[in-house]
Length: 112
Image 1 (spheres, rainbow, N blue to C red):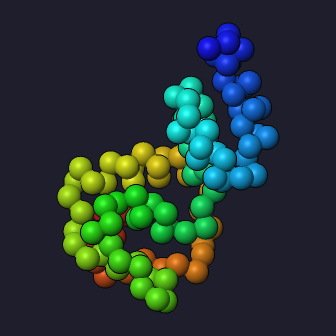
Image 2: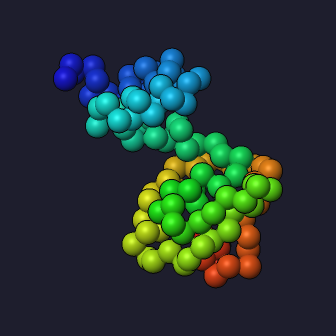
């Protein structure tokens, strides 16, 4: 790896050119470990819903209804929340969106 790529500011400058395409950021994150965390930080930085976080859980723990409501089909075990915790720490701005999470389930309370 070139020494210039050991400087975080240079990594972020490079990623600023890729930032407009989420697919490209995902590809960069999967390509090189040095780019992974900064690219994932950019991907998760702004969210308009908690749905992407819930969708980090195993697919058998949630269902997406036609009205875009997320319902838990089972309560996730503690270890399954780890990816949610990691990605939640990357979020810097959360705005409301059209997807709603059913707050009647005890698993949702774990997010609060």
